[in-house]
Length: 319
Image 1 (tube, helix red, strand yellow):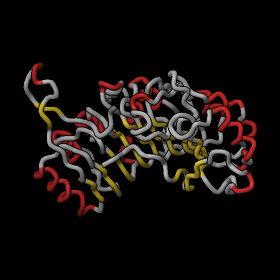
Image 2 (cartoon, rainbow, N blue to C red; image 1 turned 135 degrees about the horizontal axis):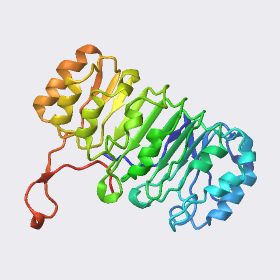
Image 3 (cartoon, rainbow, N blue to C red; image 1 turned 90 degrees about the horizontal axis):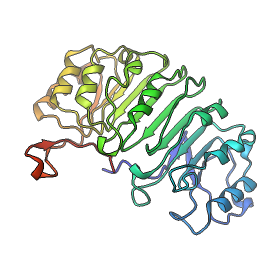
Image 4 (spheres, rainbow, N blue to C red; image 1 turned 90 degrees about the vertical axis):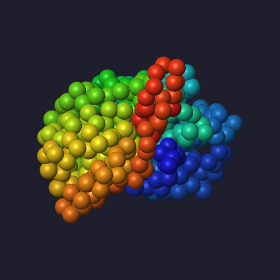
């Protein structure tokens, strides 16, 4: 199963790649699509500056609702070109959604997609409703609050624990969906339940209805924390998918607070025994909880036998 692919639609709009040397008279209405900019070495010979210039001259920026950046925003040297978007903020008056780092595995490993401090971006666009980022290297989220954000998604093979803690502590009163791919410790991840304490306590995000703590190496620990976490009571869907969940974590979920109010529980890509899978279905499906237990995995032998014997579990996305 591939988890990292180009965005086909975003913010409820079909993604439209701004074509090389586009005829401005043959473009869709500014608000009808999510505009995807993908110039430079991964897609064409056109330089980012030329692509961005043509785009800002050809499209009614005031009418744009959603932007998807592939390679243009990433300068390839550990930084990003977000300042160019921020500089033109007065012309993007209708911008509601932004996706940064829309690159596939063939273009760049997710662990090499550099991000940045997102505080200035959110401060500059108070009307932003949805923010998605792919990557993790260098990500910082020192945001005390944002009144309008409703959806936040971070797709990462290694989300820095400090950034996860900043997101957990941020005041986002309108946030309805939060999805964090925590990632492998070898690639900068390793977030623990302690890092997420304010989020699990239910503070700062009163509108939250979907929580995804995904792709994590400590899923049993997170499941045990969620078993008594106040935030769960307000959720309609919960995801611990793409990670290392085993029988210990599933046992904690089943013996903790009731999950019968959930519409969906996504545990796909897991390491559960068949007996535990049957128990989960038997206990939760009759309560109306739709449970996803696809992509069962077996623990693998250690990658480096010379360091000792044993097995290990793995997350879905790391490199």
